[in-house]
Image 1 (cartoon, one colour):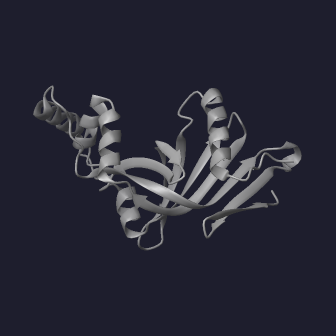
Image 2: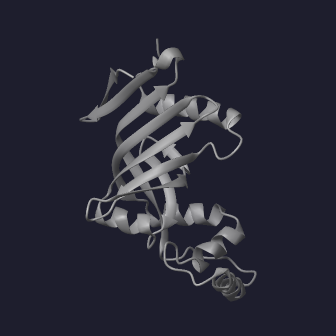
Length: 195
């Protein structure tokens, strides 16, 4: 009936590989849900940069709204939705910061303009106008010249370590395939769910 496997990460990679051939724009786009200290949820799209046995990795400005919310409450949720494939994957768990070496390596792989942008953007804070941002971009481009752009101290990554991964696949007459993996003492347990 379904494509469930023993290892949810292997299934995630199978589905991601299909998405990479069918989704024309950002198959690695995922909604990230966080919660502030008052318990109020916030949701935005981010890009998955790695997924392996240690978790799902993304990068951000640590002083952004999401960075501050994760500092106050490390639990988060992700949702991948691939409309062309009529599939979605939901991932829940605790986030942890990536180490400095991993953040440095990823930052070094980014386009130079994106590196400069990470320095220039005071992400999530008020902006008086577009000129203010463009001026900051120019200032940091001049500061670093043609040399290497170091990773800003306020920019790094998080890894969501999953304890729940749910797969959903659209089927006729709303009789969808839906199955969830939950982790218990390092072992994944699989259950099928009513759609």
